[in-house]
Image (cartoon, rainbow, N blue to C red; front, side, top):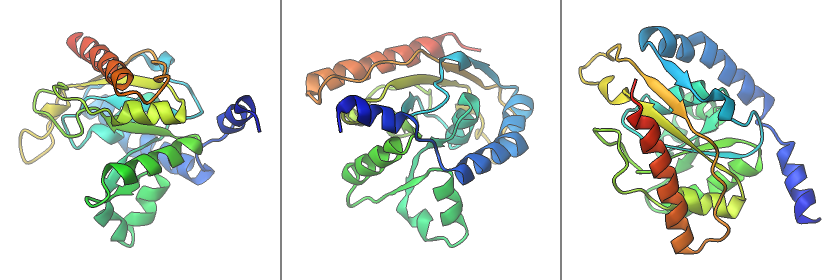
Length: 219
């Protein structure tokens, strides 16, 4: 099968119907009302989101609330990695799998995450990666990891930069605060042409610069 035929075959893939049904029910039943009403959410750049096909969503990260808020804002399910221990919980495990989550263990780390992310992308999912790899108090990305660029290079999928503004204020107390949230979605960035480290760094920095520029627009 030619590369063009492989690309066409993959492009028609979608998330499983049951996963899409779960996403839309949670989006409109819980997450989006919270985002728009409780957090007075504003969303800009929705027109930049491809409606289907594999996509790598890259963003900053400041709150545990970021994954569902981001996924709700871009209008399609986003698969994130989760601690392997969560997949041992009887009721939770099937639910988060349907929502696209994939397990990562400390022992295998990046190798496991890479294989699982590539598998999700091959199935037509959007995969979400926080470029810093962990939460930061100011929502900036001081030390971005190269994993997202590497995955994009291997899967030949675009990277979509997204800025989450204000989410670091949600858990300043024991009860989630109604902090104003703004989510800005940038234009897709073409994947690296190779896995050369210099090129991975260049694309990663381009993503970081795009996210910071969106974040600097503020509320």
